[in-house]
Picture 1 (spheres, rainbow, N blue to C red):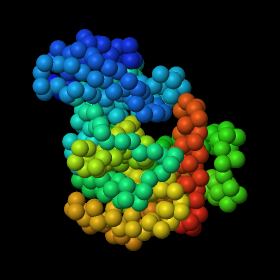
Picture 2: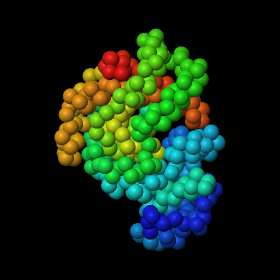
Picture 3: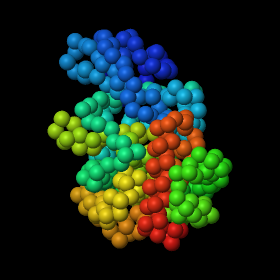
Picture 4: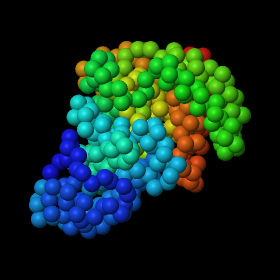
Length: 356
C-alpha cells in the first residue's frame, strides 16, 4: 500500500485532484472518498484531512494530504526554497533513521520539473496542534524538547549527512551571504509592519544584531546533526500518550544539517511566553541534555547552555525573513509578531549579543 520510493505517473496539482481514482492509485486499494477538509494554517503548504472508505482493513479511515500552497506567493516561495522537495525527501530517506515521532508516510512524490509534490501521511487525530500565538505550558515544553533529542541523537556528528546535499541549514559562505542579503532586503518592510509590536529595548536589540549577523553566522561551531529547521508549536501535535503520542513533529519542509541547539533555542524562545520561559530556561536545557544521554550522546551541558544563549537570534532571523516571503493574513501577522517579540526578549534576557 505504501508508495514510498516509487512515483505514480499522475502529477499532483491541488485539492481538485484528490478524487476516488487518485486516492485508489495512491493507496493501492479501491477507495471511496468520504470527506475532504482543510486543517491547520500552513504558511507554505496546504494540508487536507481526507476520510476514506475501503473494504481493505489495512487502509486507514482517514489520512492527511499535503500539497503546494494555493497562495501564489507562498507556493513560489516553497518551490524556490526547495521546501517541497526537502519534505518529501525527508520522509522518503531520513525519517526512518531518527527516533523522533513523525506521521507514517503512505506515499511521497515530488516532481523536479514543476516543483509540485504530494504527501499522504498518517492522520494523528486526536492529537492537537500547538498554538504559536498563545504559547504552551512548561510541561508541554519539556515533552517537546525531549522529543527533539530523539531527532538529534541518532545522527549526531554523522559524516554521511554530508552526502545529503538537499539538506539545508548549512553555514557555507554562499548560505551566509544569502541570509545576510535577505535580512538587508526585507528589514525595511518588516519594520513597516512589525515595529509597533516591539518595545524600545527589543527594537534596539534588533538593530544591534543586524550589525553583527554575518559574524554571528560565521561563528557557529560544534557537532552537527539532522535538524528540523522550524521546530515550533504550530508544527507539533500533542497527545495524551495513549490515544495519540505525547508529541509528533510535522512540517518537515526545512530539514537541515547543522547545529542541534538552533532547534532547541528556537523552540523555547517563542514556545513559552517570556514570563514562563525565564523560569524554565535552565530546566529545559537540562531536560534536553538528559534526553540526549538516553539516546547515547554525552553532551556537555555548559556548552549546550552557551549555544542556547547564542542561538536565540535564530528565531529573530526566521521572524524577519519568513514574515516577508509567505502570504499575509491576520493569523500570520499575529504569529510572526509573537515570534519576533519573544525571540528578541529571549536574546535580551540571556545577554545573547555578548556571544556574537
